[in-house]
Amino acid sequence: MKYELYYWPEIQGRGEYVRLALEEAGAGYVDVARGPRGSAAMMKMMDAHTGTPPFAPPFLKAGKLVIGQTANILLYLGDRHGLAPKTEAGKLWVHQLQLTITDFVVEIHDTHHPLGPSLYYEDQKAPAKKRSAEFWDERVPKYLGYFERLLDDAGGAYVTGRRLTYVDLSLFQIVDGLRYAFPNRMKAFEKDIPGLVDLRDRVAARPNIKAYLASERRIDYNEQGIFRRYKELDA
Amino acid sequence: MKYELYYWPEIQGRGEYVRLALEEAGAGYVDVARGPRGSAAMMKMMDAHTGTPPFAPPFLKAGKLVIGQTANILLYLGDRHGLAPKTEAGKLWVHQLQLTITDFVVEIHDTHHPLGPSLYYEDQKAPAKKRSAEFWDERVPKYLGYFERLLDDAGGAYVTGRRLTYVDLSLFQIVDGLRYAFPNRMKAFEKDIPGLVDLRDRVAARPNIKAYLASERRIDYNEQGIFRRYKELDA
Image 1 (cartoon, each protein chain N blue to C red):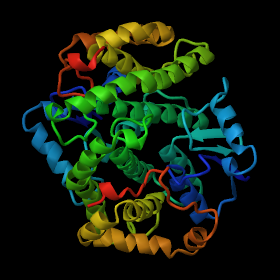
Image 2 (cartoon, chains in turn red, yellow; image 1 turned 90 degrees about the horizontal axis):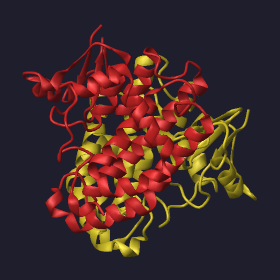
Image 3 (cartoon, rainbow over the protein chains, first blue to last red; image 1 turned 180 degrees about the horizontal axis):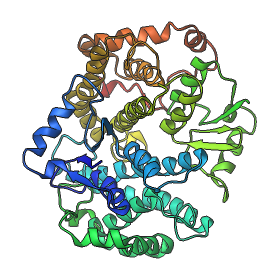
Image 4 (cartoon, one colour; image 1 turned 120 degrees about the vertical axis):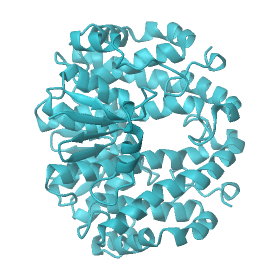
């Protein structure tokens, strides 16, 4: 079975956490909206009046299933591709961590969109500056400090121990994305998260991820995604 | 087994979605932080260096398991107490809807905290006003319109059909909370969501929920929670 991934074709965005899992697993998939008439197909599925129409992309078609919400897709894929523990307790734990990353991703997005997702960045530059300062003072240390501590306590190469899970792939994306969006702030902060910086490199060096990052399937960072480089928001 | 719920003792907040599920199920539980030394016990569990220390409340202790993240707790409880379908597809669908509600709850919170959760409301009143306007213009119609459509398409009493799930309990809380926080705006908007208004009443009339709402276990709405009544943000 070949998976069908539906996500905005121009950005990494939330789809990227799913792409990284599919790539690491070596799973066959089509990034539908990047192909001809793909965006129209995506919209049509969201407008459906039967089945399980998602509120927003990303969503994954897996056989007859249509699964929405990034963390929910990872819950499904983790189980099937060895990217999560096999026990119920382990699955709940890894999913819990992914949901914490999900919360952090909203806060990353809100650094440039504090007044809401429907207005342009240009119409909220002053509040974005305040929110970004607050984000780096309070939220980044809190979130990344938490994951750094878990990594340390796990005593293995990955957040839950010796084996890679989809959470590690997502943390790669977080560290990498923050480097892109806030190069100065991140440079100053990295000394506080040596474990996560190592984790980022360890994930990037995995053969499937390495090949993916070098391919055209990896969309470049840009100023339409979650991680945006706006000089005035960096320190 | 008696569950232990850990959440801030003074507010409904995100803990309320868990409380509603426990109450509907008639499950035995202790709301730990509302008891003596409960808040200290909660903090201690979050600071643990072994096991599965949660990033934030709410979390649920279920025997040996410590489960964090509201939607993750509901995923667990739904399965055990008949508050979710039994098939994998059904479970993923209901969880997906809960994660969409989770996203909406963040946006509800951000109406009064657009510059971030660490600053006081008093320090962000002007951006809060802008964000609230945007929220009611764009986001409420989009989110509640989606659930109204699902309810309509399902053709049953509940969002996924004839049987109540934890998502219906959460939608009760959303409609009820928006009524509290934005009485004027909600009054004008309710004509667009007749199905959800009926659903709210149907949930409120269920014996276990009715008893819960009348009890002291239900904390009153107040201006420390997610749903806050600030006149200047209402129309």
